[in-house]
Image (cartoon, rainbow, N blue to C red):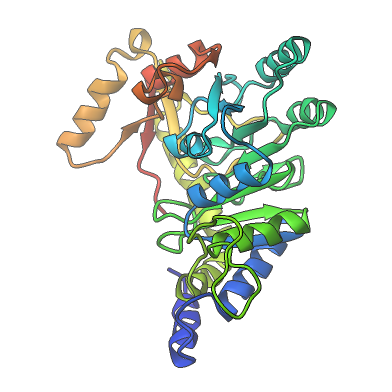
Length: 345
């Protein structure tokens, strides 16, 4: 925590404005939208909740297909299931480890000829680095497919002078305890579409109709952030720049210490932007290094140093056995050889 979070929380207690909503929520939404460069923002209980509403708000429903990054945490894809839709997983490129734009373009063009365009595309910005968005935006705009950005791991990153999460139809961020800033648990949905954000707030408060009594014409969710947690978020915004620089220093120290070892290759920083290095991740070639990723991970664990493999591609997860995939070899290789190192500030 920084120096101001407790003051915002104290204000919530002093005014007895604990829940629901309140001035901190309004302030957090306004300040966050300004921070990332989006017109509107809605604070939620989690990034997953924000993504779930985003899918519903762009029209994803029963039986639809959604093209989705494969190399990511499962919470990117489970909201697709919540809507009764089916994910189709797209492989990564090696230059950013994110969704391969060439594969995405080819898949959408193929589906256009077959008259089975996806209902939406969900692209992830992995480990603090933006995906290559321009070709994705161009193909999605051409076929009027909503592009949703999962920027849960990429707050503070840069894509050609803009923050990832703000270039598609809508974007989501996470403030879970392991993220670059935290509200202990929480998320944010952002968009330049005022009506979309207004509808998200309506859905997130149980879709209660404007009436003096409790009246509901459609179903909603209990997805709004509390005034107390939003106060933490307002303080955390003020230290985001410091957090990004601290993570990048971590990476630089690892790179200086390990970068010359044969068989070690760090996650590259793509030429189109600046990564936060939310996590320092690398791959290990056992033929050159001498041992494999798992041997190193277990050796670190024996010294009480936690390291983890990179995300297991979703197309390999048992939950998604029956889902289509486009490619897969790159993300499978990154999973097989990839390791995330301790990266906290």
